Image (tube, rainbow, N blue to C red; front, side, top):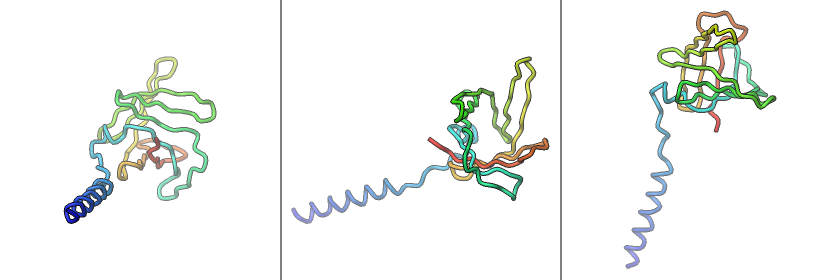
Length: 134
């Protein structure tokens, strides 16, 4: 009886460790990997990057192609549309109805970091690194 009890105890411990040590699945579909809240942690002109010590807000990519940006200081949300395929497109509609498109090259690092590089525009900062937040 003691042998059976020891076996079950050890089997239970091994089972707990095998479930808790599973690696997080890396999402390869960009339409799924982009979903969630992202806060900037670095910005600059690659490879000269500076840390963002006091982020002003976050971007939240929602499944219905809505990009919601939150401003920490004012507590306000701003809404845009987005599309992601081989590039990331952000669509900004002005009050007069004119639509601006900002295009980025993107790269995911695991499921928790995102690099965005402006494409085809001259910007003060061309590269942004974001981390996923809850």
